[in-house]
Length: 507
Image (tube, rainbow, N blue to C red):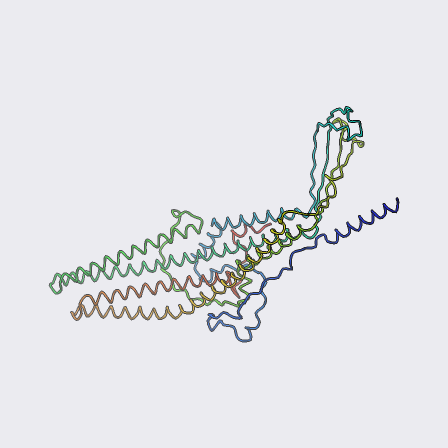
């Protein structure tokens, strides 16, 4: 008999030892970032910022650094008004506040997942009224067992041993979800900063267009006076007067169109700043040309800086861990529970040493459960987890391709716009000269008024095109910085986090 007990004890010890060995062992596949076809250099990079042949071979495997402070990148435009608007947006934009709240939500869920690593303790106190069956007291079936009131003060504990890494993989997935949420916050923050800068430059571009039309209306009024005087003196027909009035009215109408667009742009900027449209206005200020050199750096570093890419990568990591959670459902789970405390028939005797009690058994104790049949539910969960991971891998690679495209697009825009703006400036100068000549020739009677109208229309169109190109150049610079992840190479780090970022700075 003694030998049999020893064998049972040894068997139980071996089982428990085996379970402890597998406790915490993850069944999730080994996680590795999927390969992406990152080029050695950007094709559209300006020649002066392109990498040398020796440098092209030094690009490295990207390490996530989307949380590294980029600095206040908008200060590169050296515009005090823009600086102030950016800070207002970071403090009051509602989309950014919502993104910060989502980070808090993710951290709270993460805390809930981590709680499974620790035992659960509960305590209770109160009376119960009960009547035990005769059979449970080894009494005859017709025996009378009186009802009784029992007072209990008990504590209970439960703990799931992390067999096959179910709990640890769940925690890893929750950690990756939190990091994804934080990266998405950075992405929303970067998008907000870029949107503020783009709306600001668009507003100033419209101010420049309005300035062009203001000067055009003045010239049209002067031309109308000239034509009217010549008509009064009988030198020309009324046709020229009608044409001059038409050109003046058209210029005024076009100026109103620009004012309407400016009002809408101002309203959009107000919303980005977290203000109602009626609470915000900005004085007119024509746009100064923006022509700055933005080195794009190595393509591999783009994978480090872009917060949306970091978010996609973290989604992959979470999905990979959840494959391990799904696999662990095919194996036994071990839950250790128990309760103990005091129990007595009267409240006065409740806390006597003789009233102590404990409960162990099928309902409270060590329960090792093994799944046998579930109609394919676990297989379906595992297949779903693997499919989600494959989807996240494809999304990550697509996000990388889009990121490279956005950088190349804006590099080519800036490269071409650099030459196009100079060419357009020559067109403005030439059209101004042609308009001056046509007005002189009209005054001398050498040409009809249609020649003057055509020349002045050409001037207006070339001036508008020049202003619009300046606006496109400014927004392309912003778009490039945005595509690069909000900063580049030698930009100094900001001394402190923005106010909106500070909302999620503490865990």
